[in-house]
Image (cartoon, rainbow, N blue to C red; front, side, top):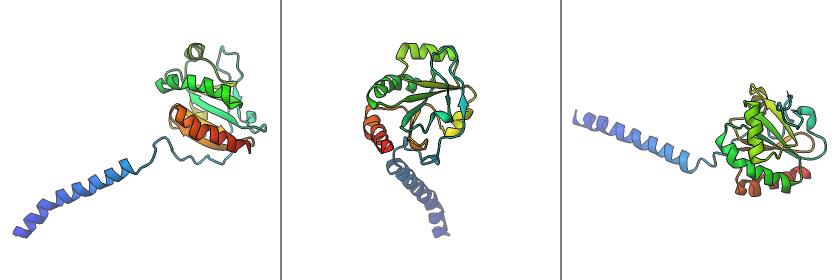
Length: 183
């Protein structure tokens, strides 16, 4: 009876140690959370058609805008997204140095708020589609805003970056993916 009592007392300790080991591995060896795998990498952009953001002088965005010979950057953003506010000056600079079109998908946003946001922070987008109900974002596989994609000259998704861009992400992911998409 004494050995059964010891075993019963040790079971919670053993269970805790195993669980702690699983959490340790998940936290320290789980990789970069911004590198979310996408089933769309290597596939053509989804079929979609988005009207322009009301009141902006930029055209909307649709599937036919891709595959015109050169790569493009697509950024999914919203005026209510705090990380999008931090990211926007980097997108303005990226558009200047990348020498490729930058398209925007404005996700579940109020058009007036989107216009104010771009007037304040700059508008790097050549085209901006208003995804008022979020359907196009679902088709693109968006987890949350902001997200940035590189689409090659044939209209295939070459890279997906989840979360706000940083100078490091631009230098280590975005620009190399653009170079690869050009070849």
